[in-house]
Image (cartoon, rainbow, N blue to C red):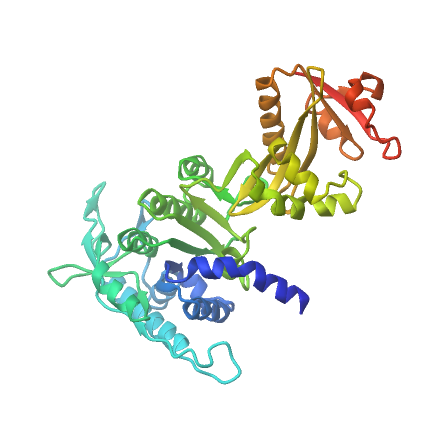
Length: 432
């Protein structure tokens, strides 16, 4: 119960922030077929009940492949795009139609004692996407394969204002009545841009973007994406990442990639600070700045656990308020996740680096190095020539960054007189 209450309290700022926002959610056909699809629907219903305006875009690749196989047809691709001839288009229409009906049916459930009880959702779909043919590329005729020309922003907006969930498929229509097979990533990206969506949420098989070692990459700027696309070399992860970057470049504030295989991945990404997938955004996720008096509460929350463990010297609220200007902090979405302080030692050109702390959930991200660089920059600006640090647990970390072992005797008299022999801290210094 305590964990649930804490989670709900920490989620409340996000609940308020997401209310009345427009989210475009892209779910590939593999995600609809996955056993976790029912849980994803429940999570979408929860978002709707919290006031989020939802546009759901579904894909159908795996379902199209199954129908082609059943009819003995061979799929054809060029430059990773399906060539949609007449018989293939019949399979596409069949797959998309059945999927749309299945999704609408799932969103219409109102079973007692289930997350859908009392939801009474309205789902709207229609000819909201105007498409054009891709035509002939490298001598290959794509036939009925198309790309998005425009999205009916006003029509979708009216339905969202009426509290409907708008369902878009990977089919588009031309002004002359032709039907085109579209990439669901293209539909989702263009819908998010044209609607001015607050978020584009892309479901994939993986938790997000994985680096060369298989570790999850939590955050990216659009300009960092090309280097990963080259490494991913045409994989589905690359398609998702490219779509996320295009959306952000087109004005969508944030794009998220999460897993359709993991129960609760969407909610964890949206309602926790750490998130659960990969975030691509134009704006700065974190800021490194000097602390102000309003940051005292956040500093106490960050350093109190380390004080309890004896890693940091205890500081009262009064001391922090008095010394707040000595601190530099890393802030992430209103949470102080790292801090460090610089104290100029009286009657000397020495300074002391103190209270360097990083929230355990955000370690191994280079924030300690960023703070150390900021403290050294501030020290030089004050005309200091040497930097001392006293530590009981992190001697190796400081040695790796140019600090050398020193002694209490080397400390200026004003600082040596305050040395706590009971803590028996090791002394290190670094020339600036």
